[in-house]
Amino acid sequence: MSFHHGPNGNTTRILDEAFASSIRVITASLKNGDWNFIVRVTANQISELRPTLNKLGCDTTTAPDRLQQALAANHNICEILDGHVKELIEDAATYIDRKYSDTNPFDDEPAPQPEQKPPEKPRTKPKQQAKPLRFRIKPFSELITQIPPGAIVKGLIPKTGLVVIWGPPKCGKSFWVSDLALHIALGWEYRNLHVKQADVVYLAVEGQGGFGNRAKAFRQEKLREGDTVERFHTIDIPFELVKDHVELIANIRAQSVSPGVVVIDTVNQSFTGSESSDADMTAYIRAAKAVRKAFGCVVILVHHCGINETRPRGHTSLHGADDVLISVKRDDSDNIICTVDDARDMESGKVIANKLKVVTVGTDEDGDPITSCVVEPTELNAGNRALRKNKKGERHQPKGHSTMKDAITEIFLSGTQEITLPRSTTKAQAVRIADVKAEFFSRYVVDTDDPDKADKATARQFCRELKKLPENYASCKISRLGWIYRL
Image 1 (cartoon, rainbow, N blue to C red):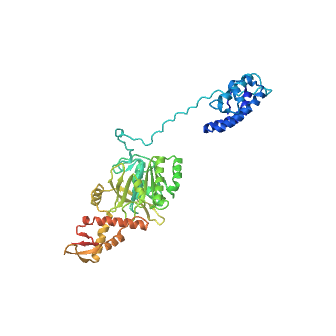
Image 2 (image 1 turned 120 degrees about the horizontal axis):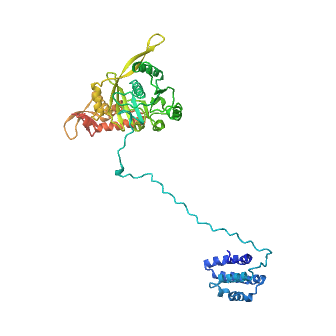
């Protein structure tokens, strides 16, 4: 701590050396209120002040009165402690500094003066801009009509998104999808539906060997001689979508193709892992969406059905991610019936009926004809018209209902037991609920490879059907004692 900053730098330094330690002690003691310690230390320092002043050649008789009093009475310093210690030191410094303002009694050269630096401008922090709100509340007045992005095939295939076309094996779904894709590449109207022409990349991962025959049959039956479909492109090598989708996107771009439609036929042949695994299916969906985002296109996935043929095979997250779900089935007349089961931004329930026409495309080495098929439109029969009505909302019985009905019928035919109804003398033929449950479990099919999941799903379905028993079977009633009986 320096208590003086006069023009004579060495005077200040000498005084600092003589009194710096005592000033620190005195200051600390003043803070703590230790007056006895201050008296003792200050008396010692005052006694040391006289030799220092004599060394400087000071005439102490001309010193200020307070300084002379302190030097004369350093044994009783209490009189000057009452607020005068700081003033005493300042008086001594001022006296010495005034006496030796032009000379330095100890150094041959004057002490260097500290370099004067220009005062620094106070630093001001730049004003931070307010972070924009990520979750902004939108009032009702700002809600406006959103124009849909349009469609590749109006009312059937959207311009962008994920379309799942599913059905059992050998139902004609690949024939129908390839015929639809060729119409898109040509820009031809499809079943009276407007088509927006676009490039198509068709990944024929399943049934690659017959795809060339299918193309030749289409060329023979649909195109004029010399015509071709320049905007229809195929890839017919095995690949795994999750593993290879980045390279697939890069390779398509490298060949200067910007598809509006990408078809993957089928999911199973391009899948990695288990279709029933939520993690594996989620990874597959993410890869399909990456293809969609890369080209701003619609991705069509051709997929198989589950064992009970009521929904697409595998984990339900695929259905949750799709924008359009189209089922393909054969009817009693062997027609290919395509139904829009669900759609996000268009009407569901649309049914398109097709038939296959056999076409000879060449002969083999034995001279036998080589055939393929083309898809032709056909009329809906009465059964399919009824199916259309059901898709639009009419009540139809689900798979669990028919399984429950068959289970009850089988157990009643196997043998019944006569019981007396509670609080009554009425007799009735009955079967045990446990026997019906066992029969239901043997008949009901769940689309999963996990036995525990299958048992839990079957148990839940049985409980639902049991609760609806009085509604679905007017002749059957449930007894609290565990019987199903008929009056």
